[in-house]
Length: 119
Image 1 (cartoon, rainbow, N blue to C red):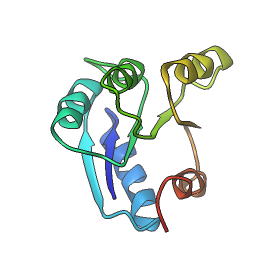
Image 2: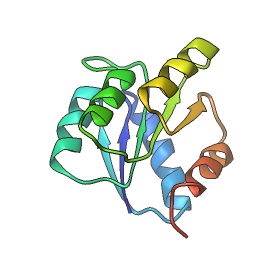
Image 3: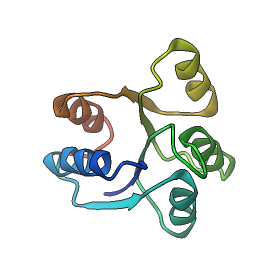
C-alpha cells in the first residue's frame, strides 16, 4: 500500500507515518505542502492520501479539489485543526473521504487508518 502524507509540519508527518507503520504500512511518501503533494500525486499512484488543511503554497482543500478534479477516487483523510462544522461540510462537499481533528491520539489515527489499510 502506498500512502502520501502532506503536511507542512515535519513533526506531524512523522507522527502520521508512525501511525501508518503501526498499521503495517511501510511505503509512505512525504510532501511539505499541497503544491508539492499535487506534483508528487500526478507522478505516482497512491492508495491513500492524508493531508493537512492549512499549508503554504496550496492548502489541503485546494489539493483535495485538484485530486477530485483529476478524476481520482483515492481515499483522502483531512488531518487538521479545522474542526468547525462549516469547514467539515466544505471538505465533505469537496470530496474528502474522512476527517481527523488535531490534536489527536495515535490510537485515533490508527482507528481511521484501519478503515482504509487492507489487513
